[in-house]
Length: 148
Picture 1 (cartoon, rainbow, N blue to C red):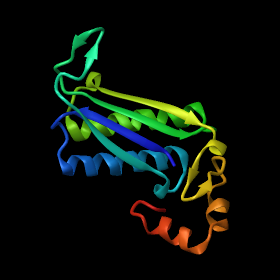
Picture 2 (picture 1 turned 90 degrees about the vertical axis):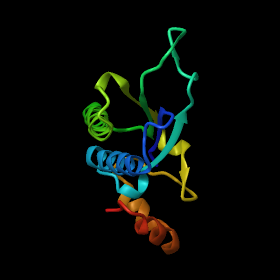
Picture 3 (picture 1 turned 90 degrees about the horizontal axis):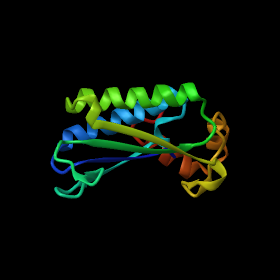
Picture 4 (picture 1 turned 135 degrees about the horizontal axis):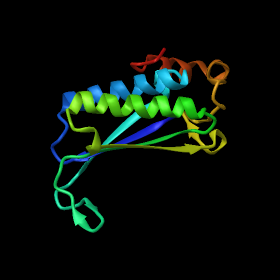
C-alpha cells in the first residue's frame, strides 16, 4: 500500500483541506499507477513552531512535505506524473507557492511489504492478488472509499 505522510506547518491545513489532500493523493496515485484506490493511505502530521530548520536556520514560512512510500516497479514516467500531480494538487488546495511544497517518493520491494495480512503483489498483478484473498478481506478493501 502506498503510504503518503503529509507533514505541514502547524495549523496550515483544515480538516476539509486534509480530506481534499487525501482524496487528491489517492486519485493521483491511482491515475499514475493504475492501482486501486484502496491501496493508498494518507497520514497527516503537523510540524510544531520552532521545529523546522534548513541550513541551520529556523523556517518561518508555511510548508507542506509529502513523503510517499510506494512499491518498486513503477516507470520513471509514472513516478514523474505522480509527483507532478501531487504537487499541483497540494498547490491548488493550499494556495501555497510551489517552492513551499515538497514531495519525495521512496520505493520498497513488494516482497518486503505486508498489508491486509498479505505480502503485496508486484505492480500490475493487483487484480489477481485481490481475487486470491479471502472474501472477507476483499470485501473490506472494496468497501473503502476510492476503491475502483
